[in-house]
Structures are given as C-alpha cells and as structure tokens.
Length: 231
Image 1: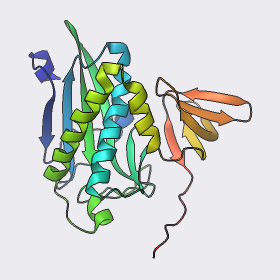
Image 2: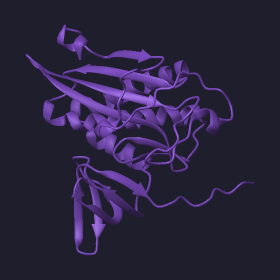
Image 3: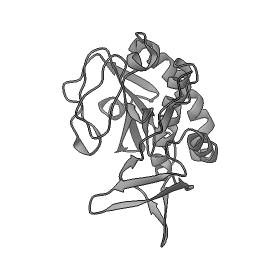
Image 4: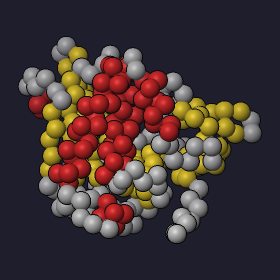
C-alpha cells in the first residue's frame, strides 16, 4: 500500500521468506514458516471500484490453475468459496484481499500464502502442504513463477471486470462442494444447505428447503470428501 501511495503503477509482486506481522482473514493468526510462499500482488486501478471484489475469484482461479499445473493436473485440488485452495479437503493455500482509496482511483493488494514445505496444526480447517501432496520438495520460487504467469493470464481474461463471466465459469469448474451439503458460519448465524452455484456477483447461492439464500461472506465447511481409490 505504501508503494501504491508513492505512485507505483502496480502489477508488482513482493515476497518474503518469513513474515513477522502477517495476518489471516478476519484478523486470524497467520503462521509464516520459512520454506513456504508469502507473496503480495499490488494492482492499481485494475477495474472500476464496484468490480474490485471479483479480484478474489480472479486470484483464487489463477492460484488453483498454477498449483494444479505443478501437481500434474491433479483433480484433488479444488477451490473452496470464496478463495481457499484445498487438496483432498485440506487447505493448501489462501488469499486475502485489501483495498485502499487513492487520490485518483484505488489500489488492491492480493496477499497469497502457499504451504510449500510445511503446514500449521490446530487450524480452523485441516491443512496440508505441497511437499506432502507431491512427495517431493517444491520451492516457493517455482510456485511464484507459475502463479505470476497464471495471474497475468487471468487478469487478461477478466478484462477489468467485463470478462467476469469467463472467470466465474473457470472458478465453478474447480469449485469444492458444488452440489453438496455445506455449512456456512456467519457472524451471527450458522446456515446449512446445498451449495448451488455462485451468482454473477460471486455470492454463494445456498439452497435450503425454504428457498435460496445469497451469501456474501462467511466460513464454509464442506462435508468430508470420500476416500480416494488407490490402484
């Protein structure tokens, strides 16, 4: 954000080997062990401000595609609404977006964390890491290079918001829990229903006996995935 305020034009990646002041969504504790990827992408005036929230879907789709590519197209890698990356139901990576107004526009920072070499214990959701999944060491630099390429491609697809329909379709193709029962924990309530889709604004459509509910924020808990077959 300091770079944006000082006039940086954006499309700038900043990485750290370890963070001393990192934080997760809703102010949760963020574990930053060396060997994992901690990256932030600065975007300045990437779209009209009303489309800024779509960047979470652009980023999570790019992240999922890059990690799938690294893992040889493994279908066990999925996106959990709105922007967590799961492998067999365990969190592998996450995204946190923040925006700030500038004198003549706005800046958005997409903070991205990928568990490359290790993962935390005792988290809200089960977690895993690329090394465990792939059975080999995967350097954060390799992940960053793949992510930067995928992010540039998906930003071009998004076209400052005019191409969100294509982003939505790509995101839904990789969505975890689609068509299945889920639980959504919100600030003052917990909802249960079937994950129907996401609408044209990226809101989760939850089908309940009384009708559909549109969810714009909340923690999603999926049903346990079925065991994988080993041939």
